[in-house]
Image (tube, rainbow, N blue to C red; front, side, top):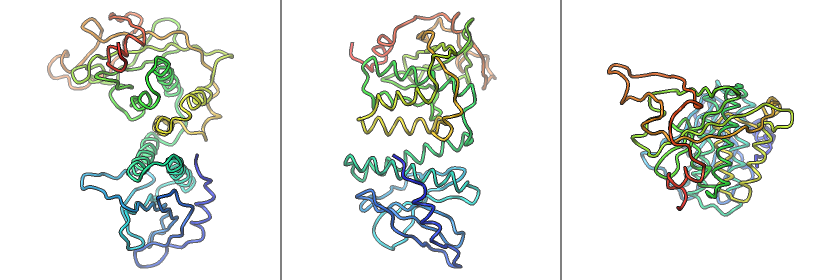
Length: 338
């Protein structure tokens, strides 16, 4: 659970990082044991920061720290000690209120992980994963989801629910949900993948394919497309209500809870925007089709020489290919035992 942003705002207000020499002013805040936490300001730019001290961890030369439009993560040494200190720092261009929300959420994620006994290595992964989710959220523009993106997220959550209802463990199912991280396909399960397309159309099923690579199955096989048809009704559920249901389903599985929160954030959903999602949806059916030699698609391997990029639209209602149930698809993917 996120900490109150006032904890950070009050700490930053008590500090001044306006000194002429480069350095840190910081005060301790409640720790997420075994981690040490501080709120700080850096001189001479007076940037707000949350400093996280890992007693025995080290970064390798290949580790890349995340950086977003309004923040940066950097390795620092405010106390001149042997700890690994990482500073989550606001950039001058970043919103103070949004950065405070980010700091509250990231530290809250560390609290939750520490509460279930996570070791330092896991806590470092939690920190970097949550910051990475904020990186993706900020890259997408800070705003509430567009109507099209809202529908798409409802469809992906519907398929995630199907996967878990079929018996795939929650943490594995949520971990396979890579659509929010801009993977080529929305789910990577077993040896293959599953791409989700969602529509409100009652006649036909228009599905936008964003690239020549999206329906390419040369790397991961088999590949399925799940077409989720929704209806807007007064008795349906809003996106926040669907999110609440999913949070209840994964509750009690710390890894699934963590991953679900990260994926939602990366997808562009935050609680502060919940009141903007007022449309109510019911499911009108899901059709899962295997992408085989009969399925209509454009890939780098079947377009004329010289074409390197393309986006196009297909009608899933008219698409040839073997139609399967979710259990059958998961068995073919190797995500479930036969």
